[in-house]
Structures are given as structure tokens and as C-alpha cells.
Amino acid sequence: MNELARSHSNGRCASLSTAPPDAILGLTEAFLADTNPEKMNLSVGVYKNASGQTPILDCVKEAERRLVEEEKTKGYLPIDGLGEYRDRIADLVFAGSIERDRLAIMQTPGGTGALRVAAAFLVGQLSPIRIWIPTPTWANHAAVFDSEGLPTESYRYLSADKKSFAFDGMIEDLQKNSKPGDAVLLHACCHNPTGVDPTSEQWEQIATFMSEKRLLPLIDFAYQGFGKGLEEDAVGVRAVMRHCPEAIVCNSFSKNFGLYSERVGGLSLVAVDASEAKAAQSHLKRVVRSNYSNPPRHGAAIVATIVGDSSLTSLWHTELAGMRDRIRSLRRKFVETMARTGSGHDFSFLLDQHGMFSFSGLNKMQVDQLKNEHSIYIVGSGRINVAGMSEDRMDFLCQAVAKVIES
Image (cartoon, rainbow, N blue to C red):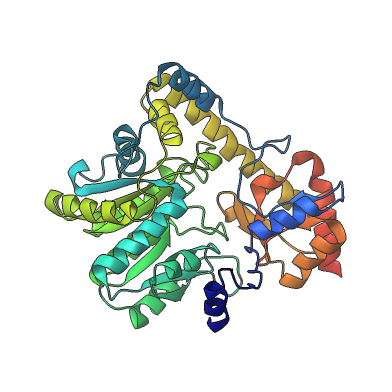
């Protein structure tokens, strides 16, 4: 710091050490630099088709065509975003389970932006507060909360066998250690990085426990429609809405609309009544105004156009089901192909997981070996992006996995 101050006094910046690369995006940088033509990237959580491309949905293309023809301005959006888009969030995420006037909804730059705004709101309005996050969880969760000074604690999520949900461990940890008023991060579906989700019965028990202990649910809803279906994947949200008078839901449409680069997300604060929702919205606006000021229009307009038109909505449902079914097919094919390798390692537990991700059970040494010897890139935790697999290269992948297991 003293050196930095001296350098500033000389009118120049001090020499800074290089920050460590992001645990996931850093792998993509290494992948792009890899010259092996057989390389395979199973790290970053994006959907890819059989050609290895992240496609633009036909419903998105049609919505964009209409927008280009009809758009009349590039003026700023309001601080809380496009009104029609915010109504569509209410429709898709809550489906009438909560009165619209109890919802303070903000359009945000992706689900990550929603989490950051939520963290700032919690620190600014409910401090002192801490948030309990599952172990494991998305690698960026702790960093996002830490950036706003929101203290984090952890609760058990994955059982010791790393194959199933540690329901009893979660409840025990929160019962013993959390305090009324604490926030708890919940993954609505397609848990990242494990793919392991609670059952509908467990969701009811979780929601009841949260209500009885007066904990605040903060739900990360990034993969709606990628697990079992749009409504089926909302079972946890519905349970929380039935039992908890207040909650925050951070959602993303990057995956289910294929709008990764458009950064389309939302924050929905569920309040006890309309007046509380209105007050909360005013504070959320203050957070946004001092951050990115207001959100971008294009991605939100695409979603609003699709969900506001019955024919485009039907097309979207069909395309989303196609992506979901292909992921399931890839998951089954991986399990079946691994069984034929003779490695002796049973991967059938992956069939009970949901969404793009699977916790493979591979350890750090095996992951490094896959990268160094086979140019197959997997997150250090052993998380695999199933949607990054391809049918025609499944044998290559499984043979490589078998070799590192045997060695």
C-alpha cells in the first residue's frame, strides 16, 4: 500500500502482482491456448448442440427480427428495467403463486448481477446479517457476497459419498448454528456444481424449517426448465412461497433462452404486503443507481416478446424441451459408455442428477491428469458440464476417464 501511494505521488501506477485466474473461466483460457485438436472443454456451464456450438434459438431469432423492425428508440430503461420483462419474470418464476403487488422485481445483468444487488440490499438494509451457503456451491457465490461485505457461513449439502443430498446434515447445521434473521442460499434446481436436488417432500420440510426458524431464503434460480420442466423445476420456489412470508429469488434466462451474452436476469423480492414491496423496490433502485445505473434493453426485450406471444412461447417450450432431453440423453450415454470401458467404476448415480452439471467424483489429481494427458478440461472439483459432451466423441471421453481412474 505504501508503495502504491508513493507511485501515485509520482504520477504512475505501482507494479501489481497478477491476480489468480478465475477457477472456471481460467480453464477456458487454458483450453483456447491448447493446440491439441482432440481437446474438449467440459468446464464452463453453457449448453452446446451436437456440433459443439451454443445455438441461437429459433424463437429468439424471430423475436429479434420483430424487434429490429419495430424498435423506435435506444433510450435508457428505467432503473428497475423493462416493465413488460419484469411482468414476464413474475409469470415464469412465480406463476401466480404470489400476488404481483407483493413482488419488488428488478431486471438485472444476469443472475450474477441479481445476486450482487441482493447482497448489497441485505448489507445495506438488514445489517448485521450473514448468509449460509451450501458446501459445495457455485464457485462464484462466496466472491459475489464477499464483494459487498456480506459474511458467509456454510452448511452441508452433499453427503459423504458425494452422490446424494445431505438433507439431515443441512437441517442439523442450520438448526445448531444459524440465528433468526440469517439468510440462507438455496439452489432452486439443477444444483451447481453437483446436479443433486432435494425431492419435493424435502423441499416442503426445508421451507417449513426456514419459516419456523425465521430464516430468509435467497433462492438462486439459474436453470429453470433444464431439469424436469419449467413448472417442475419451480417446486422449491413454490414450497418456499407457501411457507415463508419473505424471500428473495435471483433468476437467470441465460440458459433456458440461450441468451448467455445478453446477460438477462432478475431479482424478485417477496414482501409481506404491497407497501413493503414498494419500499423494498425503492431501496433496490438506490443500489442499482450507484452500481450500473440501469440495465440493458435487448435481452429483456427478447424474453418479453417471446413470452408475450403464444406462438413464440410454444416454439420456446419445444426448443427448451429439446435441450433438456439432449442433456438427459448425454448423461445416459456417458453412464452406459463408462460401463463398457471395464474400468469397474459405476457412474449410474449420475442418472439421479439434474441439469447441465454432474459431480463426477473424480479427484483433483485425476482432473489434472485428464487435462495434461488428454486435453479434457474439467473443473477441479470434478464437476462436469454434461451439456458440453458430444455423442460422436463419447468413446474418446470415457476411455480417457477410464485410464485416469485405473492409473
